[in-house]
Length: 527
Figure 1 (cartoon, rainbow, N blue to C red):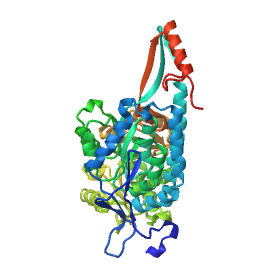
Figure 2 (figure 1 turned 30 degrees about the vertical axis):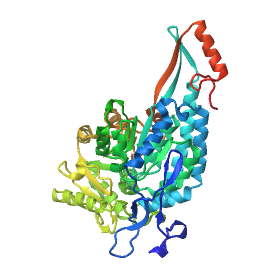
Figure 3 (figure 1 turned 90 degrees about the vertical axis):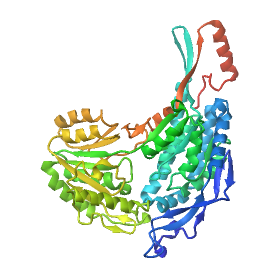
Figure 4 (figure 1 turned 180 degrees about the vertical axis):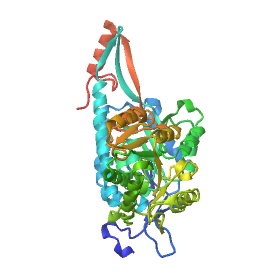
């Protein structure tokens, strides 16, 4: 198959990555390495994966070195980075993003090989991340301008700004190893925090081309990048109690385990993006063709491996048959392909995921569900063709679990209270999609849904963007809010300098502003 790969996307020799970043210096790893597995191609018919490179399997010693570097760089808020002028931090970030852009082709290629994301979506992830950084810079400027004003209330004068929280442990997800990870890392550091960042279990190599950009753009210790297993890296770091913010996008079990390791949980700020079981509610007056198209992208974009994917469909009994017929036909028309072929369906990046998906399907069929579409559940190496399951009930694993893959459970309803009760009882509360036209019905339903989830999508699938809009969840789906606007606030705290409004203090403040002796007490701002 190797000769069928376009030359500009091919990996002809393994990429044996052996560097890391601690305290502003790129170090070289000489210890044990971890194989980077791609499920895209097989060497022969009997193989189900291909080793495309290696990354350092770092240990506790280096994890604690990274922590010490971040801790010293913050230095209880007195370090160079947290006390740096806003425009200086912005200059560092602009320098970084300009260097990052030069690595676009390399990162895009690795996104395809490491996590099986198609070319279009890989390019979109990179470009969206660049836009996110630039939008974050612009939003930070707005915050700075707002903080330049003195307030006077009750005879007390104050200048109020946002200050950093301290040292951040940043752990991103494998499905968006660049975009979602940087949605944590970028706002954290631009607000004056320092960070230790460990890449996800998949999508590791693609961070390697960016190490030099981090090294050249930020002061020592601001960003520390280490590679290895979470147990060996994150565990000893959390046990020290020196982490101020746990920033994680992943599974709630991981978040809970890491929290439990911290000796002073009340001091630990959480910024978490966790599981979701986003439903679609399809009313009997829904535009069927529009709904089918939205449900295709909503359930199967990147094989359904998104927290924002539609993971269960509730269809009104009166249109159930028509919807399932059209939906099944459309799904069965989809093609399996390799990422550079830009098909919607690509190989699953986790070697064990096909077996898991088959297990969900078998469990559901044993308990009364049928595979509605003809090709549903067919396996070909690390491809699994999407399976539409109907009727699904609450005894099935696919009803309860976040499947995070190409299996689509469908339930019919007559009474709108059925899907609403499901959402109320669910452990998750991120988003919902509702399809219909009658405003007399839609209005009251929306009023209920907005109190169960954090985003209601009208006649459209669930999604992350635009990044300026809030991205969060209720219950076990999220802690704190991530977006261009809100993430800066999630990684900071309001802090202010206050003085009684008298001549002595007026004189001191005026002199301080004129002399520019304080980065905090000032009235200038970055244009």
